[in-house]
Image (cartoon, rainbow, N blue to C red; front, side, top):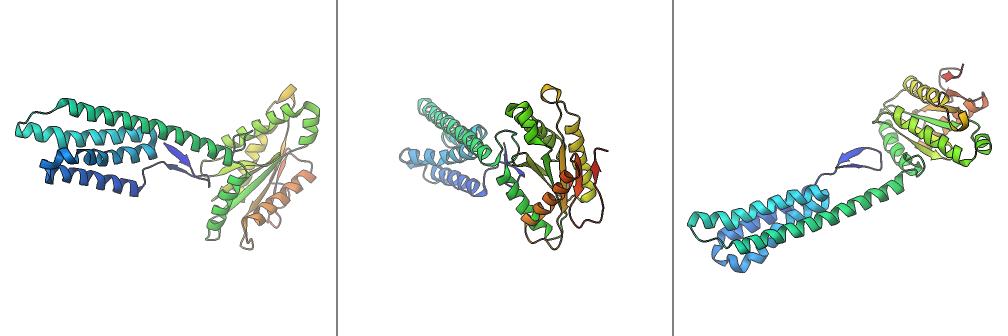
Length: 301
């Protein structure tokens, strides 16, 4: 099971260490109770089996169905170790009705908890999607982009390269007025799909607002960002949209410099470069202000 953090990185949804420790302690206590006070096992049975259910509850909570199955397996092994094996060794008769009743109770409780945990996990995933994803394109929204950018801006202050690329669809209002808002939504969705295909897993690109999109490229210099932005620009320029129409995109690129004090300055530098690309006719990518290169990095010509 994989979860995505708000900063855009993915992490396996593992059981926390404290839950593992609590599970181990409960199993040890249940086992010791059966071993040290076997003559009192009848009186302690409810407590022993309640303790044995702790791993099942914790694993199901953190891993859904997968955790429920793991917890159930642990509980069944403990039941066999405590109830059945000692009876077989000493030759006493096993009350299979009680053992079966305990097993059925464990299965019902664990599977019920697993179903509830899975439902809660899906609701959590849906809530995160609403909080950090753009509803139209499915890309990260501005909230998620800001979190990701803040994280990597801090790393850039320690020497990691960081570049951002700002994109804006050219003459989008005219496109919307000519072909309708449904066609405009199609164009935004299509461009979002292009960004998703062209962006590496270590980077993140999302919808910054309206027809503006932002790509955050940790560990990438101006040259690498220029190649990336040009692939994005060319992919959209070749794409036929509603009624055979096409739409283009302009881009502005900025590299995080030593004089920048916060992520907003980096975004503003990319936005200024984007403005230059728009002023030059669009369908081109410009480097940020103060960059040593002159002229567009890439353009339609």
